[in-house]
Figure 1 (cartoon, rainbow, N blue to C red):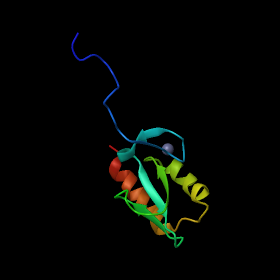
Figure 2 (figure 1 turned 90 degrees about the vertical axis):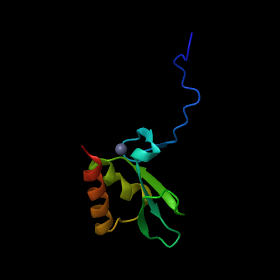
Figure 3 (figure 1 turned 90 degrees about the horizontal axis):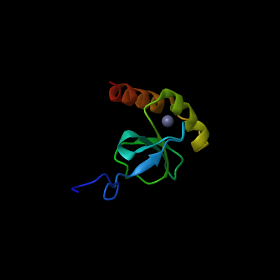
Figure 4 (figure 1 turned 60 degrees about the vertical axis):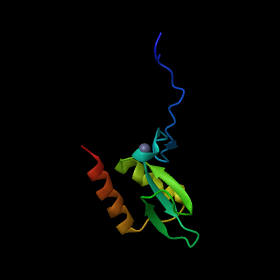
Length: 90
Ligand SMILES: [Zn+2]
């Protein structure tokens, strides 16, 4: 019978994009956090503390970020994210 086609054993952490609601591999999403000080940062390591939101490589989903974090996103953060999204596209 061999290996079969089971999903068991495949543990890829998934997160939900706050924009489109798609569940994706954690690595495919960008994490943006609001620190306890109320600062917005892009968390490339996934280890920072704070209230986080995940978005996929889409400028449409980027627009939902502000609503989700209930905080205005600074322009330079948007630029950083857009740069990251362009890099991720192929
Ligand atoms: Zn999305």
